[in-house]
Image (cartoon, rainbow, N blue to C red):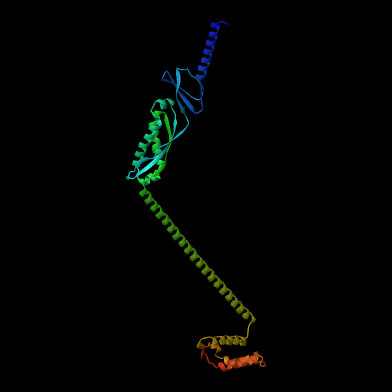
Length: 320
């Protein structure tokens, strides 16, 4: 093999390796949710989306690799002043997505820094229209106004602001102290109201319980009185049905008088139909068994005590 043939083989081999290397470096695979911005001879040429692509070596180059996913940017706290001149620090979180790779690559230098500065100025404008209390309770309103303003400004940069969230609001120490005192007073007020309502409910329940007890007691007394009256009516009815004689009725009257005399009354009015009681003692003797000592004793006792005319009165000393 001559020298010229060897040189030719070596050169062919080198050229083949160079061609294969160039072809290999020219083949590029773009991952999912990514995009490559391609420049040709220093000028924007095209954007590669996910898939396999081929570039011309030396002529084409990948200028920027861009993620199309939704991204998050945390910004440092910004000093803002409310409408009522209260200074506080507020930090925000920005959620954004790149929608135009060409505008994002050539629209603004350092787009994230630009968005951070734009967020700070917009936040100062929004908070400057709100008072302290409104600022602390209107996060949704602040987030909405920031999102609208930033989305309009960043659309020319190929960026879509999905949402903005106010993460922390840091009022001054003296404002925090006054807020804590206010919250403590509000809690004490609510506790006092709950205590008063509980005492009121307890008093109402107690009164209702006493009322129910009195009603039940009155109903019980009424029932007892009704039973007593029914018993009395029943006894009277039985007595009427038995058709008692005059002597029995007189004896019942004497028994009643004895009970009255045993009370604490000092003067007793005798009804007219008892004016002739003394004349009935003979009949009473016939009703009782004279041989019975107890009956004789009762008759003698009544005879000694009673010797009355119509509507006379008896003075009785109360028993001690």
